[in-house]
Length: 326
Image (cartoon, rainbow, N blue to C red; front, side, top):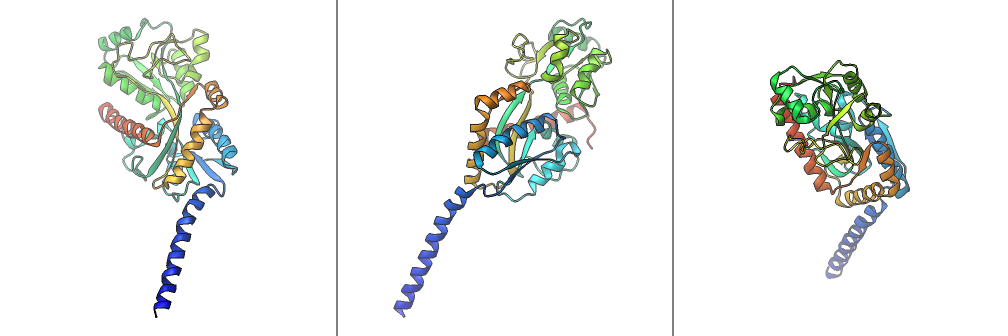
């Protein structure tokens, strides 16, 4: 009997040792198959471009294909929901855009919770919006634009790249912090919004740098400020809105990678390390710069804090502006 008990104890101990040894081995094997990076917008979009640049480097790093899969629709929600419901094994990721953090503010019902159902992995790049006016607009700086807006509440309008877009929220944040009332006019995208200013259909807009640059170079638009907290290397002569008198203003176009909630720590660490290494190479920094973006990475904790902060800010802006929720 004692011999049998000793045999059972030995087998149990051996099995436990095998399981403990298998766990690190499983982590070392990740990824053992292709990784999907979903994009909630169409091919050719800024989010798609960021995903393809990062995925190419992950393929090189992992020795497994990192495949970009476009699932556009519902303002990016189709792809985001797919990732929320995917197994937390690191094989289904999402290239998240700043616009995704607006959906919880403008939707009555959401099939996921951005702050609960995902694992932030790393921020990858940031871009700017520029507050631009037609050269004929009498305001030569932000303070003069604010003075005009306060003299005629509701008398100035601005072009946005759609209801609930990042540019729309940029305008509503300006209204809130500058204590003015300007009216958003939705257009199909950032290029169309910029052209609406050029054509005199609206008074000003918040286009992306890539949309605004050719029009600024041709002097068909005038930039009064950038929306980010710091001046941009793309337009270093242009002050930030904070510097120009709108205290606390900070709004950007950004991209980052997230996965389903519950990603194992070892898988999260592998992904974070690979993305950080890739994004900070000179090659990737130059590639992002050519797209009007600054390559930048964060820890998962920092990226998670940014997502929570933007979701909360967007909810407040939508409530204050009276935007109708869908």
